[in-house]
Length: 76
Image 1 (cartoon, rainbow, N blue to C red):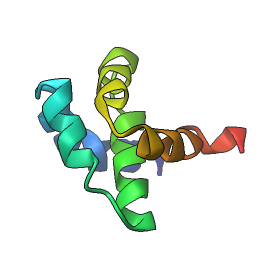
Image 2 (cartoon, rainbow, N blue to C red):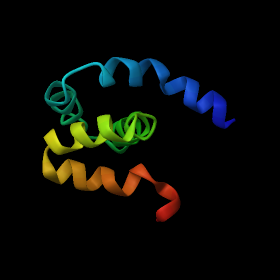
Image 3 (cartoon, rainbow, N blue to C red):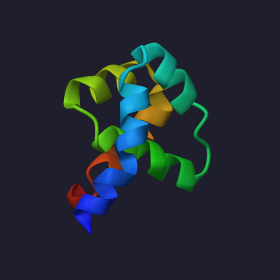
Image 4 (cartoon, helix red, strand yellow):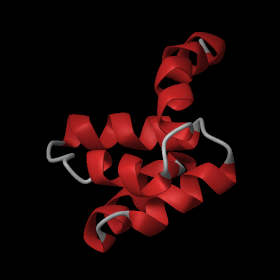
């Protein structure tokens, strides 16, 4: 269910939202596989908009662009 899905990300969200955006972005920049990208997108989707935006702004621009398509799948 949607609630279980949100709970799955709570631990990730709490950890990454409490990091400096530059540090979280450096970790997320290591995402390579489709599975990695899905995880990062899920974490960012469950964060407050400002936190996610701050992290995306610090990320590699190519990766941030790819994540844009995954952040709101209903827009695809």
